[in-house]
Length: 519
Image (cartoon, rainbow, N blue to C red; front, side, top):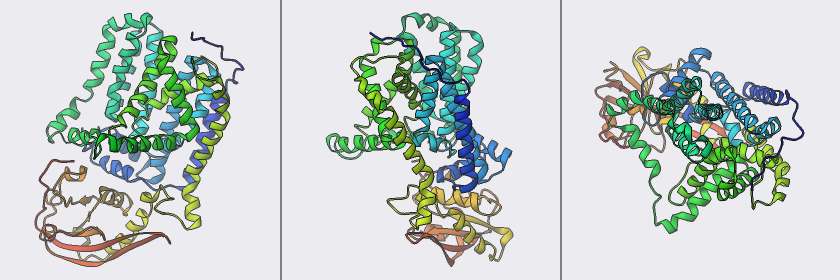
């Protein structure tokens, strides 16, 4: 039988505050001194924030709204886009600890913080402003609010903040739409909580949170349901037979999870979840709450990896409850039948290994740069972030020499990141266009007005072309003439360089638009 144990050896009241404050200051100093360049996704979402709308190609709109707010408050700079996720991530961690304290006490809350901080995933979450930062924030807030609502017998005063939290979470990422389903399952599986399912306010809350998507759906309807079409391809099986792809898919997913959580923390999490799922009926409401919101979906995602490639960040919100579940068991707040107690001795090695992984996350890029290995194809996971600022600096030199600077715009061919990084790093952050050569809508750039629609007919274009990207005749014929004016070669390190050809297209006549609405 499950036994609820006391939270022994209480942690001093202010220790958790000092821990979070200290980590915040260390991370802030790192950002000030090292100024990591923007990820491609960050510059892409930042560009979304310059053209606010109710919907976008691949995601709901909140990340664009957040980018616009951050740029308005702190300017469109690397520093402001680094401080923002640090603030959001610290607030998320504080709310996680508050929930852990509600469930199991101060000492377990402190251990929960130590576990979360020992994962590279948390380090990245506090460093990069992508959709996962606001999603984790709203999911964590909703976990705390819904638990308080159930414990206080469904007070009406908590419904408004819970509704807003769920709605904004849904506008962050579609994953938030699953929260009400887990909440209903939790109430249904706990006899002393089932009466809450009869409360009208609960169903109004959940329905209203889904209604936050109404303008997004209307936007999608007017854009050929492009977000839905893009999302669908994430759930297609991998190529080849199931038996052929199953081992590689599973190993790929396990490797990703072990990497972003650190190996020993991942192992302990999986171990606790496995035994907890098989002993679900033995637990009280606290453990069931965490299992339903973490263990069940994490297990389901591992099963999904049998048939398809899974992205490393997809289970991000499910780790929130899992961290508390692991901390609670390690701290003897509850027992799990069948789980050998000697695994509790792994707590210290798991934390040490995790912090070593986090140190690597923060120090790897500066270290590789100092050793001349920046951009190494196998050693440098930050390879795709490097060289964009230098590329923009060299491209600006060509812009300074064009014959009609007041009537010249920029086109970046190839990947969408080429356009978004140039938009961010070029002096003055000009509107940058992208042309999709495969006759399809493959990014937000194909949904925005093209230069002709923006009133730039007869203007010239400075074109940035990756050397491995061919220039199609269809594109050439859009201008009176297209000529090469030079090259941009950015030597990131002795092992890696970015190479582009720079062309000048004179007097654009028309814009060759894509045909299909395929992602």
